[in-house]
Length: 476
Image 1 (tube, helix red, strand yellow):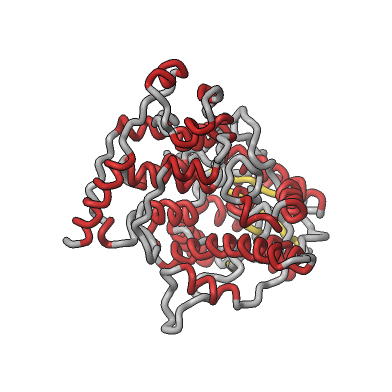
Image 2 (cartoon, rainbow, N blue to C red):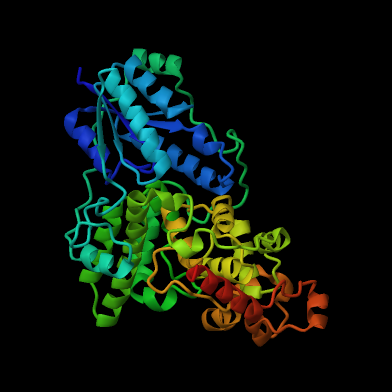
């Protein structure tokens, strides 16, 4: 009988284009998947029911995929530091393989698990899978990590990209005796999100599993990618890929995504279409930039990158923060975006920038409160990408022009000119004229009639107030 290799899944819930899994299959025909429901993550106060629902649905699809190729997915519940080594020892696995992560919690966890496995005489192999280029592969001329996106992008795009990894095929699973041993060691049937205490009754923005992710990618490349640059900023238009949850949980491999963009480029018939595809490729690079930054500067997970913002005197008015969370600020575009997220677990990227700027610049509230609220609501919340985006919006991150302030009215006029997005998510305002919706110039009488709040702050006054505080911090 061939040696047994356990493959520990985390952010790679697929058997296709999976670097570590493909390497495991090269070593042995006996490859069995493992997923550990980690209370260190699931019992945190930054977990969204919609995200757990998507994850559990994707695990169900992953289990079915394993069965189709002759193996199985084992499910554990508890601390990976205890559960993974105990299972590997019980099954006398030759090795445990997994794919690396950039986040501080994951890196600490992986070191602990690796040490325990090695002490038990079990081989450990870890690979980079979720990035096209591993951290510290893209460095400045002096060998330092990049802290500005544009030069990172120039370097990153000049490098060749790997082809998708081979799919898992013709694998062998556990014997019946081994399956009994696995159960005795703590393996359980796959629970539902509701079994874990996470109820989500609405539709998911993206169906779980690999097939749904590949279908969405194909649809995007066929219908939207060659108009991406023009359409991506309009929240009432389906102009983005909406693959963020699939990339966060790895239901699709990044090499497969890149290969699809290259295929789309090869079929282009105009420079304009090519420019649109290059723009989406640049968005994939932004994802990698933030992950490289999190890996090289793990302190980003806790606070500001820029010195002037490390002790910024935020106001943090709890009533204002709650109004922002509830979509009751009196600014229609801000409220539409927050209600979209609260209801469906996803928000358009342009709107994420608008609401983040509003929280940090208009309400002068610590970005970390908003970052955490996003974590509690979004299907695609990812520490690196969301931290990077929030710090960019808060003027605390890696941005050569950090002082950016969005005017909600001008953003609405530019990106929701007909008020379609606002009407969809703030239905009490549907009867108003479009100009009122997008400018926010709604009379007190109309607000009373629609039962819609007055603006909780004055944008111009707060903008000036933030600028004054920011300049004071810079001159300290």
